[in-house]
Image (cartoon, rainbow, N blue to C red; front, top):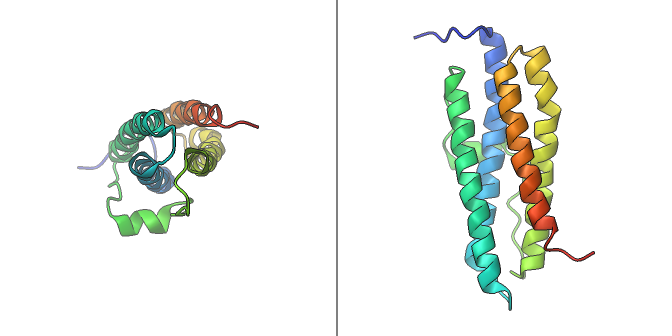
Length: 158
């Protein structure tokens, strides 16, 4: 059945394509956070193991929300590793050392990239594509990523 929600098919397609990239970023960031949870080493292991777990649980919910938003505007969400790797802005970097500081810095950089991508699209979605709902949705995601980045940043000494 055709989606009739007051946004043209062309605009819904453009929003869905941008959200597919976001979903890929969320999935890669989730996977990297899982990696940190599983592989962190050092005297702060237990605290960091729990911390990374709380972050990947948040990312899991965010991924689901992004995929459901893509469906709500009448498109299908990508759901293969191959598609995520082709769509993501992030890299699958691996670390030589699995200490918390190195893992945190890498995850922080990724969150900041996601924040910038979201910020770039807030007004575009509302103004250019006439989709205030998705604009509002990604504003909330941006705020969640900003808080997660703050939590990561708070572990680092400058």
